[in-house]
Length: 119
Image (cartoon, rainbow, N blue to C red; front, side):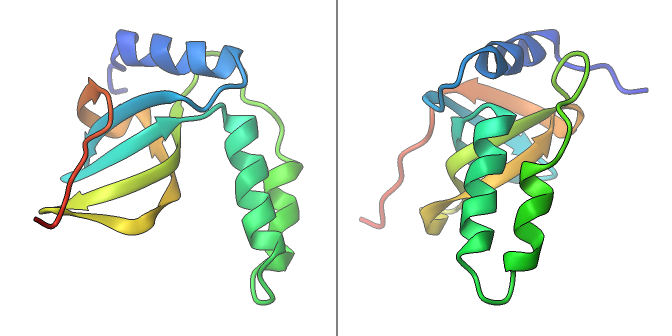
């Protein structure tokens, strides 16, 4: 069983205790750099559900994000809102996305989100 970063779990728990999506964080996971804002899982699930509900092809998946039972115990995942995967000087997607990252898969992290430009 991998050892979780206790400080990162505490940050995730504090985000989960509120209903804010303003905590900026950048993580390295599986070789990818993801930067954005953390959101409580319930807020993240609601937003994903709304996006799926608006899609003609994916609307059937919407309900599974609103009916999930809350996790027991400390958080196991980080839920990013308005996040980007950094690839060189570019953030993908440009408008930001919704990412769920297992805390146990984070190999490095820092407070704040990275800015980038194509200049």
